[in-house]
Length: 349
Image 1 (cartoon, rainbow, N blue to C red):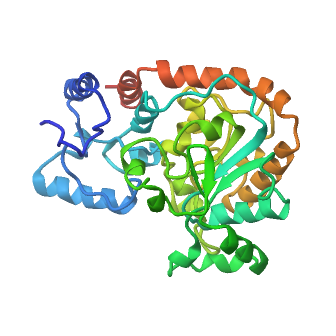
Image 2 (cartoon, rainbow, N blue to C red):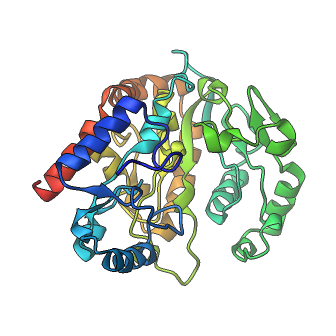
Image 3 (cartoon, rainbow, N blue to C red):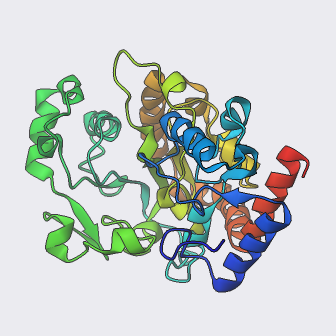
């Protein structure tokens, strides 16, 4: 069975696609995407797999031959509860390997941090409010930031009530704030003719090229699945997966350090280290990654404020070896081979 055109990892070269197909065939396995199994969310959810069990039964397919190989880093919970094979397939790493995304020039920037918040989420806006209270949103020597969608466009959002009226007034006066090439605009991405790039390439609407990385050092990333689950939710119970996106790896491609929240759990950075990357606990505290979801933003806010006041030249030199290591892992790892080895290691195939 061949992969459906446009559905399965079309960013792979023909050689890598053929190697992937051959590797699965040799193991008697088939990807869920080859079977055109439906998926409701960005990550593969419990409801998806419950539906897949029924579909496999109806079609007479042994679930033990079906591989759940999406961008879920924390796939072990799948293996414990379902007969499917489960492994992280790093297709976002292939996107970042694209020659369209250039690493930064080897220069020391003048601005300590960037936080390209982009589309609204309550977690991103809560962190923006923390940084605003510390006067960082008005100091381009310490922080570059963007936010081009607000809660006003989301009628079902209720968590914004936790934001102060003063901060919401500040944001209403400063949003949309969209970054493009080498400057910030008080326009929405579609007004800057950026509408198609987010779907097709690594570029985000608010971060079109390497300028923002060349001119700021540390990237603050609250990735797609790291949003607040709500006051009464236990995020660790609801969201077992850690779903990577291009934002997860962009700083690595640009040889820059990062403060990163991928999803809603603790010890998420360990999952990056499992891919061979290094994080920055030797330079600053990564205690935020060991905190429960609702405490993590407070730790990130305090850390970012402290980093904004550090000597940027010293930070650059303290992190440069780690950044070079991460770049080499990203660019030199054969991720098809890595993925097939993970299948063999996890299931003794």
